[in-house]
Image (tube, rainbow, N blue to C red; front, side, top):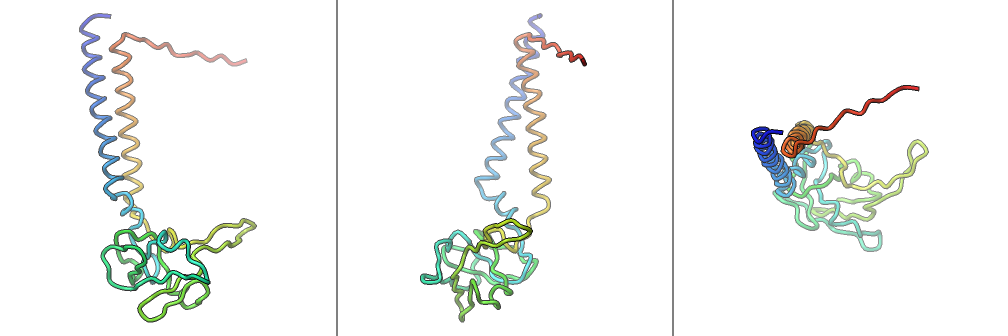
Length: 184
């Protein structure tokens, strides 16, 4: 292998390594900044109260969690924000307590400007399978572009890593032969 081919391989390897690293940093920043979470917990799909389901997962009938209802931009601890279907969810919202659940009054009750959560998790059965019914992810609508963004990032990273690997093999003069498969 000539020195010129090794030089081209080195440049290709370095260039695509930088591109791959940049894509990874961008994806990590999107995750750590909360952008991905904001895209997942995007809109309300039902009328009710946006809540952070993690804040009351230990509640029981004997020791219910009491959520303060208000127009908060960010849900902190035991807070709930009234929302209509289609409204953008506040920061830290992980689910919705629907007005239907409140009317039933079995798991949650609306009392003035507070919501009393008595049963945050309930085991239910549907089509022969048992599952935990929680308020996490309930009543939300995700941003439809977030799926396209995820596919785009994975595709771009795959291309960049493929070219990086090709540059690595060119750098060291490795020629990989295709494996021939024979039928019986």
